Image (cartoon, rainbow, N blue to C red; front, side, top):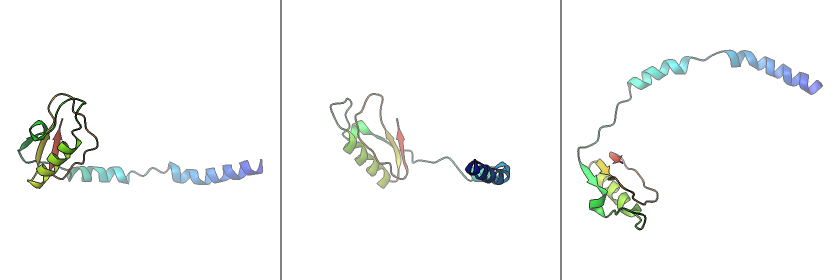
Length: 102
């Protein structure tokens, strides 16, 4: 019983701090959102099927897609396009200025 009373005392002492609402982060959120703009990508498309990727589960496209993302980034960016269909791949790594379009 003594432990329960001590626990209850600590809970009650902490309640005023927990009940005090902190609206400050929400006030800053509007200012932060004003500074965020949509990304702009270079108007150049890189179609994965023109760079070695093949549809279907029989072919692993991981290397082809990662190479194309690297190439796109090094050439100033653009859009790496994955056409309709199923393309088997492992992990891919996006780079700066690359828009992966599915």
